[in-house]
Length: 389
Image (cartoon, rainbow, N blue to C red):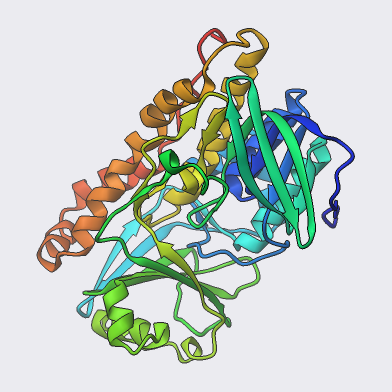
C-alpha cells in the first residue's frame, strides 16, 4: 500500500483535530482519534518514506502500546527483528544485559506503516507541507500551511504538536521555547551495509567513549542502523567530521572501526537533551520528542513518543462532555505524571555513561542493572482522563 498524496489547497477548512508531525507520537494519536470519530488532519513537513535519526529500537513498553492499539501484527508484517540482549563495550571491556523483549525496525519502514494505518482509519495525510501556529484561542487554533508557493489557513478545535526536536510549528510563540541543556549531545544516524558492524543476532550493541556513544542494531532488511550521541566539541576537534569523531569512539571502546562510516549518508539533530516547560495551553498540546527529550538507550525514546500519542486520545475525547475544559492545563499534569516521571532513569544512565568510574561500578552491579532494564521496559499505565472513568 502506498500513502495517499493530498495537496494544497484543501477543500476542508475546519477540522476537529490537526496533528503536526507524522512520527510515532503523531501517528498513534491520529489513529486513536480517528477511531474515536474525530475528523483528523495529519501534517508532515517531510516526504515519506524518510530516514530519521533514531536507534530504531522498540522496547517492551513501546511494543505494548502497539498491542493496545491492535497494531502488533503490523510490526511482525514489517519483519521487525526481535531483541533479547544489550551489549556495552568500553575500554576493551564487554558487559551483556538481558532484555525482556523488544524489536528493531527502521524508522522509514515503521513510520510509513503507522501513517498507512492512520489513513485506513480515515485520517487525511499531508506530506511535504510546513505548518505554523497562527493563533491560539480557548475555542481552537488557526494554522498556516505552506507547500512551496501555495499557502492556506485552516482551523482546528484541537491541535497536537508532535513535530520533533527540530520542529518549527511553535516558533512564533516564545512561551513554548524549550530549554536545551548545556551538556546536551548531538545526535547522528545512518544505515550501514549488512556485516559492516559485528552485531550478534537479537542484540543491541553500544560503543562508549569519553566523547559519546554509538549504538548499533540490525533492522528488518539486515542493514545496520548506527545511532550516536556525541559531544559537539568532539566533532569540532575532528575538523567537523562526524566520521572521525565516531572512529574515536569505536577505538576507545576497543572495537574495530566500521569501514562503512566514511561513505554513509549521515543525518544529524540539534542538541538532544531538552525540556519544554510548557507542553499545553488551552486547545494545544505538545507530545513526543517535541515535548522534551533525554538520551535513550534501548528503545525508550520510541516508547515515550508512542505512549504520549496514546495518552492524548482520551483527553481530547473529554471535549465531548466538557467543552470548556483547558486541555493544555490537564495535559501538563498528565504528561508530567506519565512521561516525564519515566525519563528520570535515562537521566541517571546519561550521567553514568559519562563517568568511567560509575560505568565500571554499574557494569558489575547486576541487581541494579536488572532493576534499570525492568523499569525502562515496564508498560505504561493507561491513564484515563478526568470524567472518563
